[in-house]
Length: 273
Figure (cartoon, helix red, strand yellow):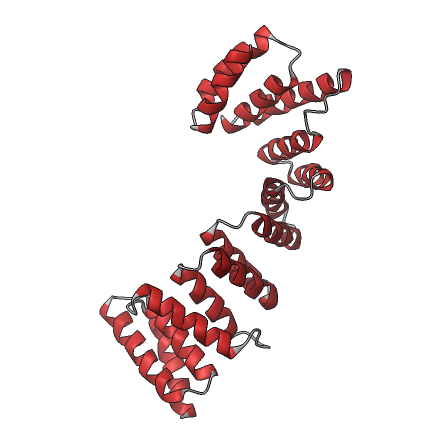
């Protein structure tokens, strides 16, 4: 049983859930009293798109632990897996409850927050979703795109200060990402955000960093830089940068909405000079 179980783990990690299920089902036949085998079989069922079977196996784990408690099996992991299975079954609110309990037991376990964010989103509980994702990214820092996605979702909900905090964490985790620096700058100079957040000086240095990292050939980053220059009352520079952004965007067939935004900014800069 132990040998079969150890074989199944790398197979599941490689994404071959069906093969892992076969190995773990064999291991369960050889040892029906091992909660670790039952738990991993439940995860394999979940990965294989069989949430009903996963729930049944996780119930077996609970029963085995009640019969023979094990200090080596963290209860929070069982609750976390149960939450994921409930979400896969369409029981989003029940999933949220299970994952919140898991977090109470293990408040620094990053993946519980990720799963809670997904469950809360499915349940239409947007604020809880955003809070969970914020905490997830505080614990799991090496996810460049996710920092920006979170920042944009927070902006869409009107949480500009929290969005900026997420963007700052993104630049700290990925100091060589032009996109991360642009996001940090844009939140601080976006003309649609009122009241403004952050600091114009930081916005300018962040936007400059984004342009430098991208080689100065991305019209989106140049548009952000122009807005940052304008926020620092560098009107002539803002006009020059926005003009270059518009030229690049036009030459590369940018979407009409992008062209309209840059033109709107340029008009505003010229009117203020």
